[in-house]
Length: 312
Image (cartoon, rainbow, N blue to C red; front, side, top):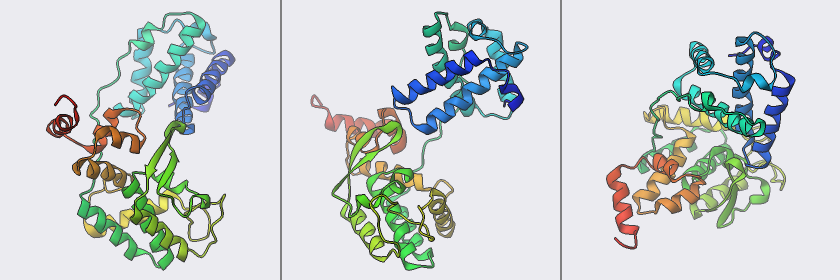
């Protein structure tokens, strides 16, 4: 939304305040680097707009005087840049978080910013694959690779996503030191949160088969999953393989690597798994996130509740 020229209008004091807040998000709240980067971009755009909107570089005092009218102008400008409701809501959330901190530090009332309503949008529920579809997808992926070791690699990655509920970044973040895979893995997920994930025999066997065929020697400090030239396997390579497989099988575009993680949660719940336990396995901070991943309806939730509650 903002141009390099616009960002130059941000005062040094505002830049310093933003950097201090970002450092605290990283150090004290364990925010992931991707989250910090998004915060930086969103709040910088906001500060740049306000500087230009008010006619030039201003200090922190001007930020304390932002009005409802100013907020409406920013929202309107952002919408005019073809920013969707979901993205705008994310930007507003970042601005509000920064303002709560800034207002407390500087001693002003941030009502105009905090009272701004987020645009409404429909949350897209993840679409898990049926058990048979997940199996067919893995089988199809195995048949696509030109080199046998690459086929075994792709199968191992997808088996980890489906069998352990890993994010693709978590699976590709494994190193040679993790092999052979133990019965449980200690995974560091978003925000540096650790969780313990059981590893199914099928997943251990798949990784073992891949390592036995891989032409590149495993190194404790190197990536477990290698690209065809020996470097770290990229998420894009797995996404491309799955895109080709789903086209062959006639599956929807929602059949992505992340859908395998969704499927892990849904299939566990269908088998009678407890939502809280699944939440722990996925590494979700909120149970509501797990409910969305499992795409369960109210009736299904009540069945789990009635079966599990000690007073039921």
